[in-house]
Image 1 (cartoon, rainbow, N blue to C red):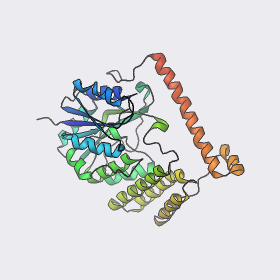
Image 2 (cartoon, rainbow, N blue to C red; image 1 turned 180 degrees about the vertical axis):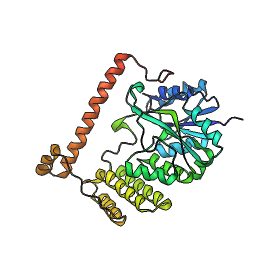
Image 3 (cartoon, rainbow, N blue to C red; image 1 turned 90 degrees about the vertical axis):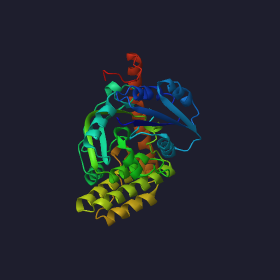
Image 4 (cartoon, rainbow, N blue to C red; image 1 turned 60 degrees about the horizontal axis):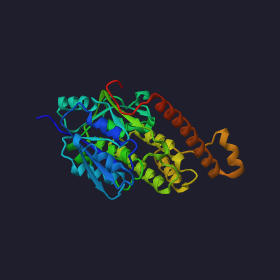
Length: 342
């Protein structure tokens, strides 16, 4: 018998893009699949839109709002698949994404093998996505994969993975404490429970870049910053439990340097913890420097206002790029759904 794949979609206020996401799930060329949407107490038309796909084999469950991690845990509790495909409610799968990965997984006959694939960002037009390989786009051992993630500041998007039920159960549930980077921490555990990663070229995922509306956007929330620090601590602990070599420690220091900038100056306590951890690893986390565009604001009004100005300008730039892409999308008359021509 061919294996069943469960496509699990947590959804919260996802009315804008959910139809496109569900079309890409229904259109998978792997016929032995179940599609489960868990509506996390949405206040818009998310449930109504999801139920329009019930005739196409989509199962819809609605719960009170509990957050992304709890919603994913609920989705897994409802599924029966031999393999798990996580899919956020605004992302897209290429039609043959799952077929390509299942074929490789079944050939290897190793339920502890973690299957990955290609991914690219887009805003409104998936055809504009650029698939740019990173150091993670190859077959790797768990320790090497995580080392590269930390030292190169790269990652794999949630939907790229195809995970066996055996491996999913071994990794344990999503951590409901994490308001951000819950996917990064979760797949570290999946990775550490695996026998390694098998990369499948051509198995493509289209990741919609939602900016400040994304669950992964950290902004200036204290709770999100605390969750980010917790995830960072766990990333480092996971790697060192498998490899505590000099290179692994240097990768951890680089990771702290890349991400601790988010804590300064709003959360000096978290920044100091990062610095203390870096010193214990044989490195350091320097105080972030502002470019000349913001240094005068720092001199006149202090670090906090300069940092706020920097974040606001970044948001403005992103908004302008997004507005332009939306205009092009409307002019071209695209509907956003994938087809065989993508």
